[in-house]
Length: 384
Image (cartoon, rainbow, N blue to C red; front, top):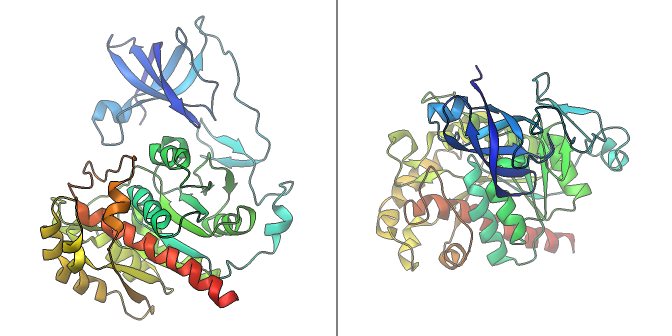
């Protein structure tokens, strides 16, 4: 169900690619709220404009509901004003919703990349990091940049979480910092540099059209979980592993690890990773196992003693993934990753916790990035 509200724009806070943040005074409550408008869907609202809002998540106080979402922007007189750029293609995303958006797909007829992708069937050993949560993206890219500066990283965003990539402040920050070269939005997600129909065609577009050295696949912000074995959006991580291996890529499974989550099912190696990689993934991946026992050599991060203490439990849980699918367990040293994470001027949080609040999480994601960076050079050496 949608909870509607109307209001007037009282201020423009600023924005980033694909989104603008607004102050809006609601008509029903008379209170001011933060609102987010997607400029791929409408012209950027201005002070004095009337807006129609979806406030369902905001009014429920959900974690991803910090914004009222602008559904339509009208001029001060209540009539439709400027329009966003007209669609250049015929891929429809958020299909059959009132806000369905038409985009130009990299893989559709008429695209400059169509002939390149028409019969494409191989990633040629491309390293692809697969992670459960969107918050893994930043530490993964920081580790890649630390170990292999200049690596061309492309992000493929699936549609298990947020659909508009513009909702991700992490993507905007990573691009501004020069750590993320390009993006592809697949399935029902939209707003990337390239759009693609499926994870498979999105991976091929990242490799062939965007010339990626490394790809990272995660859902967008807004992970959904129900506290059940199968009812969580990160199940898609296992399907992404299958897609990478089917296309002759090199999947790197990033473990979701926590020493601070209050929920037992997410302590140590999360059940999300164990289910996605252990049950859903039917093709092999390199499972990046962070050497948490060596975390005591790191500096500047709080809580490292607790990280060391959980090393054996994480190793035992990861060992259970080396089963019939043929996953390869790769122990990844953490030396130097403290520098990579601490030196970054980028905001990193997961479930409201920063680096000092849950260092094991960020180190595990960084370990996957480190292994992927090593695979780039390994592949280059094999090619020579």
